[in-house]
Amino acid sequence: MKRKLADPPSPQNDPRFQRERAEFSLVVGCERCVYFAHRDGTCAHRYPNAAHKLSAFEPGAEPAGSFCKEFELA
Figure 1: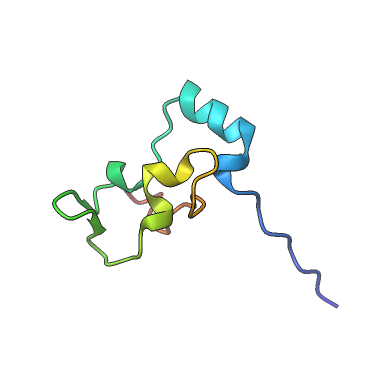
Figure 2 (figure 1 turned 90 degrees about the vertical axis):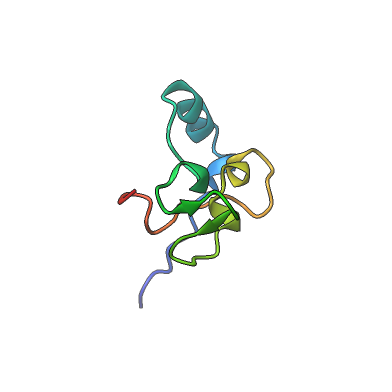
């Protein structure tokens, strides 16, 4: 029988992530991505991006922040 992996914790609820984000100026969020269209706040690839914007990584944000599949390419 296969084990089901637990969902990872949300980044904005992880104190270590928040501390390292501030300490190392981690680049997260659509607004820092080369595929972000600043004129209308959308993704050039048309991905839904509400959970990928900088505000989604703040503690208690809804929707919870998550990393985009293009994150490492940008």
